[in-house]
Amino acid sequence: MPYLSPALNVMTTAVRKAGRKLIRDFGEIENLQISMKGPADFVSVADQRTERMLVEEFQHARSGYPILTEESGLIDGPDKSHRFIIDPLDGTTNFLHGIPHFAISVGLERDGQLVSAVIFNPITDELYTAEKGQGAYLNNKRLRVAARKLLKESVIGTGLPFLGRDGHARATAELAGVMNATAGVRRFGAASLDLAYVAAGRFDGFWERGLAAWDMAAGILLVREAGGFVSDLDGHDKMLDAGHILAANEMLHPQILKLLKGAGGG
Image (tube, rainbow, N blue to C red; front, top):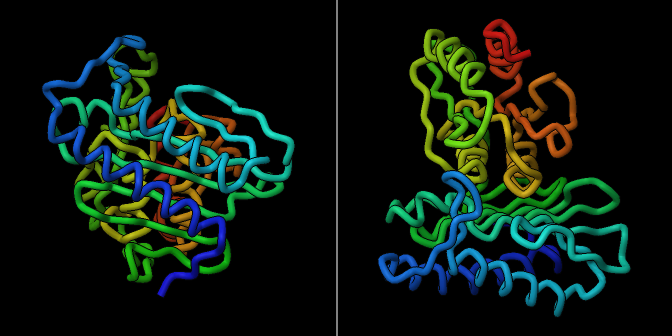
């Protein structure tokens, strides 16, 4: 059984509560009011409501903790040793197109170190949790990263820049390099779930550029607690600041990093 600290219990309760409302919203996708935040970057009523619900839950249970969210930015608090990092709806484009692949993602930092993580896909009822030093779990099942050693047998996840984002040429070069060396590449459109899939051994690795802290925070801890290795695309431990990430097992990580640098990504 997964270990649930008081903080992780608060987090799982909050995402399940918010997830029930997201399921209802997803069932009424055609009636959602949406506004345009930027090119191909939509914000739905469901996204905003989920964030409000999570913030209210966390402020009630941990009133002094600052909260970093996708929509509201940093909501400050007096307890500077902790910070929640929230993506209320990772995979918004999937959600708005009726594709049941999206998640609520919450990470908790203590003194700058990720200590608790939850990623929840309410449609599949898959709840990924991790606690520093206590392992990673999918519902009640302990997770381990895949043990493959050869790139040619590996399936790698990625994300690609969309309309209005730069880096298309570099992404194309990196994609070609990985495609030519592996069994396949997948682009599912929700970075938090991609990282959870690495932790679960579904993907052998994952890389992406142009991410924010809320896209990665929970997934970083999940992969690490599942026995994986995570770095930025320079090979350093600065993912949240750099905005890019590579996650895999310890055998494949250096091989993928070399591929990406060889493609002009390093």
